Image (cartoon, rainbow over all chains, first blue to last red; front, side):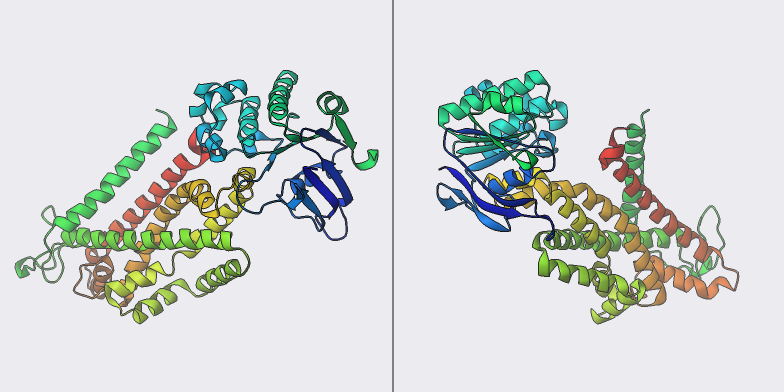
Length: 201
Length: 269
């Protein structure tokens, strides 16, 4: 198994656990959707899986080992709000190269126009910014992508485009994908396994 | 004219006035004593009058202001840099360092300002050096607190967490992401600290703890003038005092203008 969560418990305060004994495993090349209502802990789980937060107990294993604390993390998280995940004072070229150096071909494939690279985040739309976030997360060392409501804020056409781009790259490089979403339709469309979460369990 | 253009014009005008006073003061010779001209009230020849030794008060005032500007700029510059370093360290260090810095800020702020400047300047050997050190070590607190809060806020952004996951080091994040965000705060804080420093310099010198009496500082002029106020020589105190106040108000205005330009909320209005 590529990414495994073992019996994870987590609570933002001591008295109330958000995640109580959650286990999940996703293999390379597999696309799993995590579907559930608001506030059931989907985002919390994805942040724990990507190593942004530590669980109170339980373990996250990548290739059988804990996630690296330093250096490039092979599990990358894509957020719901691209404008919060990009430094507003940087040109997008800097934002992109902070992660890795994609070539022109890849950018073209991602639907990123070369002239966007010299603009600031306020000069692009949410969908355009999200393309940067996706492109940035798909560096050569990335082996697993967690998309936390990645396309929720976008209109339907952009949503379809972004997912198509992501899935194409994932397929080619045999990446594992965990897609967090509200929408069961989207989940069934893009993933080969759906994990129901929260009250739907 | 848009407000932006007007603000920039105002900033330029203030900078020119301040630089003019500073350069004029630095280039002038000390006012020479001329006993045939002593204790004259203001006239066209001596707009600010002359003192008991027949020295032209306008020359003395500009010289004094120039010296105050130098002391103020040096002190607030160093103080602001201390604030930046301490603020960033506190926000980054968390835990023990953060507690220590907060304790230090509370301690420094808790002691009456003037008293603390006097104590430090005496301990550091008085004179202009003691005064500089005294002002430097008392003025960083407010700005450090602002910078600490701001860094904590920026640190919690998604793009900082993402940068860490791309394998970027803490140093890289601090120098590329955080410090550039701090610079506007830093410059505004620096400029607004400037009048404070000048007032403390003059105040301390007036009380006799600052500049040595042979320096032509504004504080010296004012404390001398106090002795002759009762004999009706009002111009000795009024004009230098007024000039100091105008200078301080101008710099304060400069800070407000820069804030208006750099603050993203008001920048595009």
